[in-house]
Length: 93
Image (cartoon, rainbow, N blue to C red; front, side):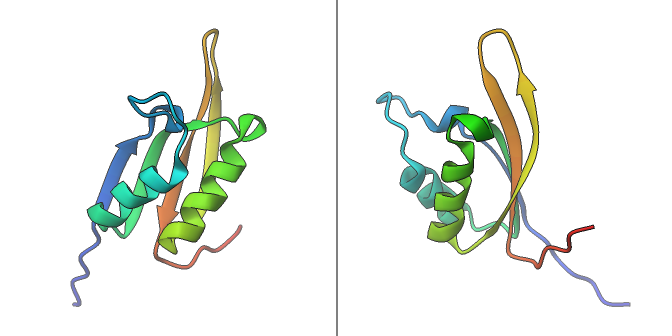
């Protein structure tokens, strides 16, 4: 039996807006690169129709990870989603 170690990271990107009120995908990508996980779960990703797709594409390009957009939460105050980033191949089903 072969044992495989997979590093998982969970990160709440808070809509990709930092304490300085700037949306900076490169800053998020830098944090993820430092964490170095094989699979990274992101929470509070901007909704796809509100720039989330551009955010995921940029972070994916900067980190070399494959991005998978998840379901979105359409709340009263905000619209956010979840996403996975992975070093592994992605099989669409």
